[in-house]
Image 1 (tube, rainbow, N blue to C red):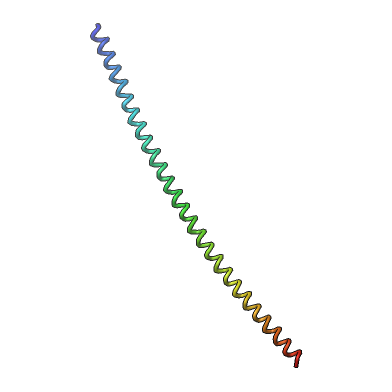
Image 2 (image 1 turned 60 degrees about the vertical axis):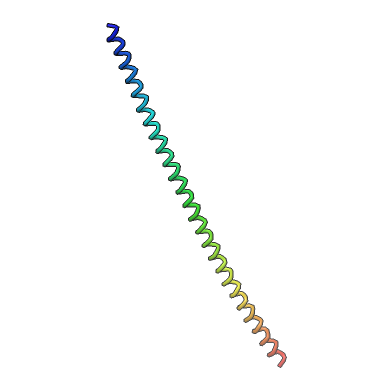
Length: 94
């Protein structure tokens, strides 16, 4: 009878250790999955930041081009106005 009880106790202990070992493996798998998700999210955030920087650089370049064009147009308009004023002065003097 003692042998049966002892065998049952040993079997129960072995079953408990096996369950704990499986739980530890599952926990390790969960940790690995979480680490992979964190790495993927970090890569996606880095890529998004790079895309935002590229878009900002492009927008700044476009704004600089538009400003230069507007300055050129203003200079042309000023030159035309000065020429017209000169012609008016010459006509008034004659």
